Image (tube, rainbow, N blue to C red):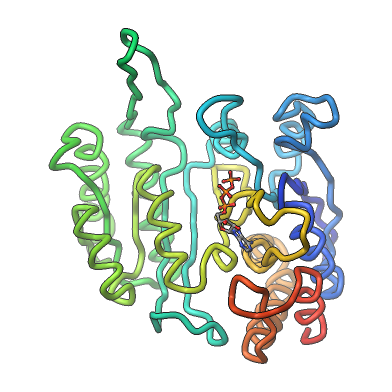
Length: 338
Ligand code: ATP
């Protein structure tokens, strides 16, 4: 295995503890990555830096691959989300979040195997808000033709490479005729002209959420604009065990940042009870991405995936999944099964 350098951002809240757990598994699996540690979020502020320090940006620019813990976003006021700043800075326009039933985790649903593809840079996340007159505030939803077409291309290309059968677009183009209308028209156009062999379906998002809750196994790939993708990701997490088991990847043209869907979970931070699996699964996605350059990363990813699947099957679980293990104990259970 070649030694690849990658950026590591432990983040805030539960970030450092789940990061430590993940690193212990990667070390035990003899994954050859030289980590370049950088701060972001409250962790960066605490060392007297900007919330998104320049040396963190430079490192991502240079090494192009990062594994990132969650960064706390203040609610209502305060600095703007570091997670969103990073996605915009590197144009990480495609967020991919696989949602799969895990054999050892019993939930109300079986056979869920969804992939959420979220447009990651536009929509209401443009952060353009203003006070029109006192008592009246406004938020701008932005959609560009380029942005809508590039995520549609990305999604159909991904579906083809992964041999997935269908893309369903969730939208609200009946109300937001211009913005969601453009998103919908763009994906329709890419489907019709370039990928007619992939099934394509459009659903108004409210009806789509109802269908999801009735039977999530009826969907394959969901393609959504930014805010819908954010909300539906957490909804879907609930089908398979919650936020502790949903990984994520954010891809741009050159850089890729791998991070769990969950936030910094301040309510359980520092208690050694968080589930490190979502970040571990994100690290596995990262290894599979690095396998494009060196297949050895792909075999390490497969070994780790088998080990955590087996741990869950053996009933080794953290509390969010109904088990009793602490963060580091779950990491140990995975290591024991490598
Ligand atoms: P942020 O402000 O950073 O988004 P948050 O607490 O608002 O943080 P999440 O971090 O996504 O949002 O957490 C939502 C809920 O899910 C919390 O109650 C948290 O305890 C739980 N949770 C999130 N991630 C995990 C995890 N890895 N293991 C166990 N519970 C988790």
